[in-house]
Amino acid sequence: MSKGVLKLLPDDSAEDDASYLTSLLHIMVSLKQASEGRPIALPDEFVREVISADRTGFCKKLRAYLSAFGLTITDGELAYLRVHLPGRYGGGGYREAGETGVPFDRLAEEVLYEVEKRFGTDLKADSRFVAALSRYLKLIFYRAKLGIQIKNSMLGAVRDRYGELFGVVEKACRLIFSKYNVLLPEDEIGFLVLYIGARLEQTARRGRRVSILILCPNGVFASRILLRKIRSVFQDVGPVEVGSLRDLPEKGRGYDLILSTVEVGRQDPQEENLLVVSPFLSDGDIVRIGERIRGIRGRPGRAETGPPAAESGAEKEALVRGMAEGLWLKTVPAGSFEAVVGSIAAALCDGNVARDRGEIGRLILKREKMGSIVIPHSHVSLLHIRSDLVNRPFVGVFRMDGSVLMESAGFAQEPVDTFLVLLARENESPAVLEKMGNVSVALIEDAKFPAMLRQSRPDDLRALLKDLLGLRR
Image (cartoon, rainbow, N blue to C red; front, side, top):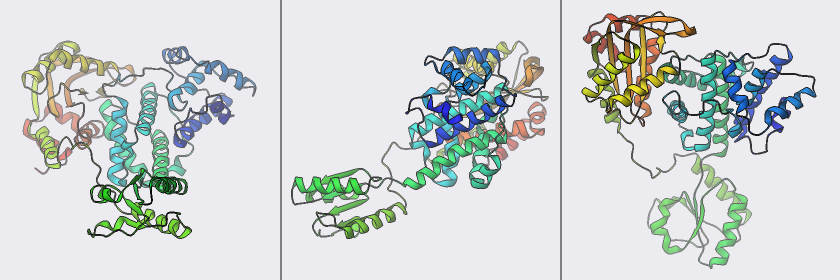
């Protein structure tokens, strides 16, 4: 039945096997609960917005399909299934664009940065996968905000298969989502690990692309024949190009493997990537080329040509150290939340931390409207934004002469008298964002930290911040 739901979509709906499998699992969970009389309940506004966004007639086709099995689903179930469709058919149009103040593709890249640090595979280079992962993170985020709890029946199997990856992704989610006062349950992390793990395995099977240069002095026609044979036999390599012998000194270093139909004098001992083959590509040639390709994939790849990193390692450390050394502790007058934000934005711009106090204030208020930024029972609120109007990564503590009532978890009102402000640039390096994530994680997980923000002296706060940022005092 679940596979039949996906067959209602065009053949190009799933971007890859991982996307298809993840959607299938959520559909299976939803249909199982519906068949057992335990439909998923969603807010009315969410349901209306998702169903009204259906321009393909999918919702109507789905009801008809399920009715053939004697299953009638609620509008809530229909909306849930709609947003979990794969690829561009998913999402349901619900709040598509960056209401968190940070595009979800940035969140996806931050998660993949942690994965790359441990496993050495750069999944961020695959723009389609980043886009698919960002859509999935959006669904996870909204499920957490809406209080939708999903039971992952495969959690144990996922832990067994991807134990190390589970720990890496769990840490990444704590660092990233804590800035939005969201802690993901293990069931959600399990689905995310399954999605990323499948792509890691797929990438490992495919291996890195091996570039090949063909040198054939027997004419263009013979070169093209050899080119077609190489592409036919070794379909997972590329690019494969044809050149002349005079191209070797200039182009040779730019390819993983050079295939020549004649012996070439090797003036450079580094020309170990050159292999002499028959113009007709014998079985022996195919074996030798295959062995050489496997050897190339087993060693580190060539350095890719690309734009230099925004900051070197030393510069990144200086930025992180600057957050600790430049910690602010200031007092702002009591007032409404909007007035307090205005005072904070003015102080940030007057202190050359940011530019355009009006826009900085607007971004903070926009972020607050997304949901609770108040740490329950702490009197502390987290204000976190990323913007190109921010001049440098920044940590500051603002205490009020009084308090203001703000919405906390579960729509409860809670008095707040202290604000922890974290600012980052739009294209901040993942290493710096990871360090800032440690601060927001501590705010949620360390009960003493909010109390220190409200009461401690600047030197004590600075010492604590250095510990959280991983700096030596």
